[in-house]
Amino acid sequence: AQSVAQPEDQVNVAEGNPLTVKCTYSVSGNPYLFWYVQYPNRGLQFLLKYITGDNLVKGSYGFEAEFNKSQTSFHLKKPSALVSDSALYFCAVRDLTSGTYKYIFGTGTRLKVLA
Amino acid sequence: NAGVTQTPKFRVLKTGQSMTLLCAQDMNHEYMYWYRQDPGMGLRLIHYSVGEGTTAKGEVPDGYNVSRLKKQNFLLGLESAAPSQTSVYFCASSYWPPQETQYFGPGTRLLVL
Image (cartoon, rainbow over all chains, first blue to last red; front, side, top):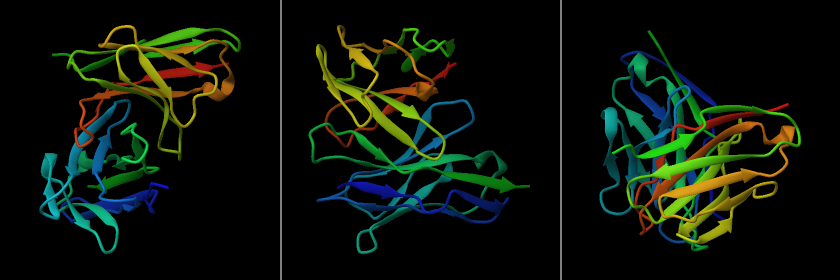
């Protein structure tokens, strides 16, 4: 079965420090991986995705993610955190096995950037 | 270009009442989805549609029905609301093929008393 795990419910980081939000996956075949961010009382906003190609994917707002096939991970990173990055982050994998192409979401990681 | 819109933004229901949530998209997407978001559980798929006139069940379909009479609209119905359906509901849409991004609406907050 396809699944996504976000092992940390919350990540705290000081402003200006690098941040990492972890995601691991389990899929059959090649994974289509996505990161979304949710600000309070808002819908999910797309950050970046990995479909194929370069393992380092760059996205919106200075975020990037590294696809690691051997570790089945797709960690979200940013070199220097901003207070405004504080939000709920979701990793998702696209289900290619059932024909629905639906997302399977992780449970989310709350990022708190401290001034 | 409004993207994905949802109506209403917030609603309070009594147990047993019915209501319909409306999702509209102006991007000509084939695929549309309804999710619910509950604390600590991420987003779970309720129903989805791969085109006008077609719908299918997701992970948690019980107590909900959907219809997609027009390509741009996807309706989610609760025939007899229960407190367990208190949640935030998100609609999303996307193109085919599956590497395309899903676009999400702003959400509907539903409280069932």
